[in-house]
Amino acid sequence: MIFEQLFDTKSSTYTYIISSGKGREALIIDPVIEHSDEYIKILENLDLKLVKVLDTHIHADHISGLNELNKRTNCTRIMGEKSKSEVVDIKLKDNENLNIENIKLKAIYTPGHTDCSYCYLMDDRVFTGDTLLINGTGRTDFQSGSPLDAYDSLFNKVLKLPEKTLVYPAHDYNGKKNSTIENEKNNNPRLQVSSKEEYAEIMNNLNLSNPKMMDIAVPANLKGLTLNQI
Image 1 (cartoon, rainbow, N blue to C red):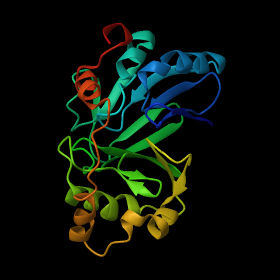
Image 2: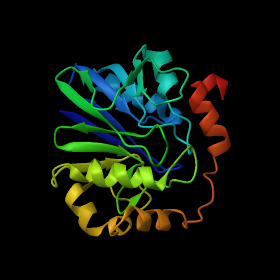
Image 3: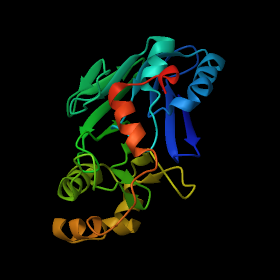
């Protein structure tokens, strides 16, 4: 299997390129528009055909490469069914599968960070978007976020996956590349709570400033802007 984890230093975003092997179909998860040339070069070097591109949610800290990659490769644009994006070709329902050549991912609806957040389970790993971060969890104070929904998504869905499941988030701010469900259950400070009310109390008092790109990125991602439109 080909599994490339790429990092955008400006927004601390992880992008994933996945394929079952050289010369086969490929999927990209959470692309950043400024790195479109880099993605295309990697695809060409590995003789991969990009057939699907996926965003875990509407991002607020960077402009997605979803539509730019579609323009260049005619790949199918995918998000969860709760997404308000105007350019998505396929909207996956909760527990619905996304398939490319010899690879299957299952959509898991995990609202809380936003109301359109989904995680994607692939064999031994889960792509958690901003729902579950390494030693953290996604903020819940904008884009119809909800700490109570986030608690339910985390404790009743994501954390019930097998403990050895690898966790690959959409962001990391401390140089960590992956974790496991077991590690997050035992060591993530946000998850050491005894009730949804306690979790909500933590999340409602983070007092974080808005992402610098928020006023640009959210409308751009809803409209699906390409490089020549930015």
